[in-house]
Image (cartoon, rainbow, N blue to C red; front, side):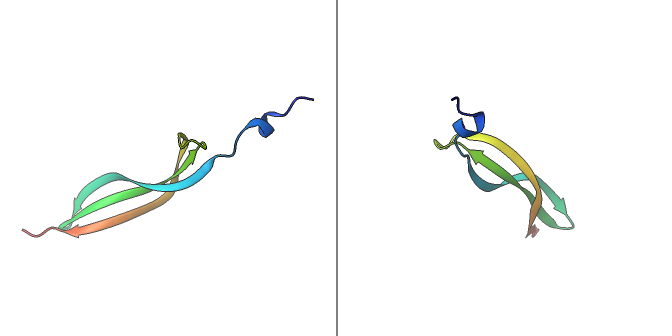
Length: 65
């Protein structure tokens, strides 16, 4: 009896990653925008799939002249 494709596939490891996607100057602040991504890796650590999520983080730095 042959194994189904689902039985042969190894489970992927999952982790979240934030990546810098933009830098802006807004009202005297430098604003870094980060987007969250879902990373799926095989058991050797190779990234198989990257899926962007709808989560963003913004970090503001005051610009002093």
